Amino acid sequence: MIASQLIVDLLPPLKPSETFGKALLWMSEFKVGHLPVVDKNNFLGIVSEEDILDSSLFEVNFLSNTIQLDSVFIYEYQHIFEVMRKMSEFQLTVMPILNRNEEYVGCTTLSHLMTIASNTTSIKEPGGVIVLRVNSKDYSLAEISQIVESNNARILSSYITSSDDTSEIDVTIKLNKKELGAILQTFQRYDYKVIETYQKEDDFDDLKNRFDNLMNLLDL
Image (cartoon, rainbow, N blue to C red; front, side):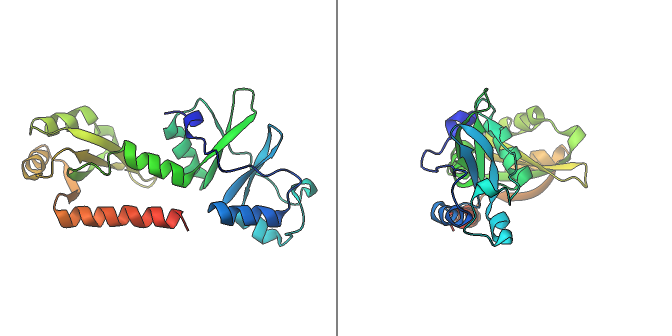
């Protein structure tokens, strides 16, 4: 999936003539913390709620140049993973999307991406979840898949989380079966460090509650 397929049609950009106060009103209405500022198809930058509140100039418009707009955007042909990476890097709730001519074509939101991610990563599908901790140089999804498949199961989705202060990564895999005992034993035989597992109904209720709470926070 690429950025052009992620555009949210109902979120309008701000015009340079709009006031800071109107920007805050729209942010509250659309439940976002950022908005793009666009002059016709010319992307001028993105403004945050925090920038406006710090200025305390609610009647001033964006033509006054009293707020420095951040030039953060993604091209329409870039992959959803790059969109997520950049939104995480700059802590954005909205990502402007430009075409190859650097004209503004729309934007996507964090809540929209989370909804898509919940479907594409099989969060709602039944099955067990295992979190492994491995050294980044030893990571092999092929080997992990082989271990899973040797126990008559398969991986529905996977993702990696890492930290700058360690060479280890956490690999989260979602499987198509809840009974994980044999799979966990095989991982242990291969010297994999198992950090977390979710296989009982209570575990999945907890996972679902965490996800629902996250989505509720995004809707605040």
